[in-house]
Image (tube, rainbow, N blue to C red):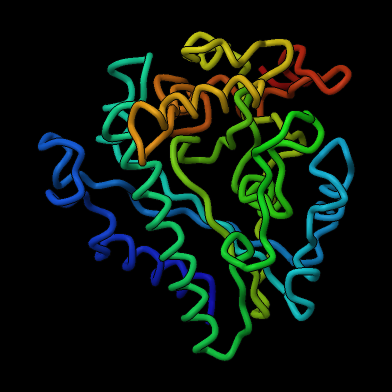
Length: 296
C-alpha cells in the first residue's frame, strides 16, 4: 500500500459517505438540510521516530504526558495526518453573524467530527486488512483530554494532539488563534493514524511554529469575547467559557469558529507570507516579518 492508495481511499470515503451531508432528520433547520460538510482531505506523512515528537514532551510544548508514536504502538513506523477542510457552505454560514456560531458551523463541529472519526477507523481498517498494525490515538482507550479544572498548566491538554501531529507531519504551522494553518487554511478538522506501514516522510516546508501566520490580527477582531490578543494569542479559559455558553444555547451542539472564518488563513496560507518572508520571534512571541537579503 502506498500514499496514493490511502489518499484515494480517503477521498472516495468522503465523497460517498452519507455522513458528509446533513439529512433532513438531523438538520437544525431546513436551510442546512442537504449541506455538504467537508471538501476533499489533504494528507501529510512523517516518520514515527521524527525527533520533533520528542520535543513535544517539553513543558513549553505539550508536556511529559504527551505519548510518542512508539509509546502508542511500539512497532509504529509512520504517522499519517490529514485535514478535512470545511465546505464553502459551512464557512460562509459562519461569517454572517460574528456573535454566535451558525447552524452550518454547529453541524460541521459535531457531525463533522463524527465523520472524521469514521474516516480514521476506515483507514485503520484498510491498513490492517493489508497486514499493517495501526491505531487511531484519539479513539484509543488510553487517550485522555483535560478541559476541566482551574490550573492553567494542567488544563486544555491531552496525551495526543491532532494539531501538533499535523505540524510534525508537515501539514502546516500554528496561527495566533492556536489553530493550524494548512494549504487549505485552518477552517476544518484534523485526524491521524499511527501505522506499522513504512511510508516516506513528507518534507516540512517550514521552520518556525508560526511561520504561516501573517499576524494580521483579524482573528483578534473576530473573536466575540476578546479571547485572543496580539501579545498573548488565545486564552483557552475565556474561549472555553464561551463554548460552554454556546452549548447551553444550542445543546447538544456547541462551537464558535469565528477565528477560523473571514480571516486571510480561512482556506489558504496568507498571501503576505511565503518564501520571501521570515518571522522574527522574541521570547516566544512574534515581532514582525522581514525579507531576507537578495529577495526583492
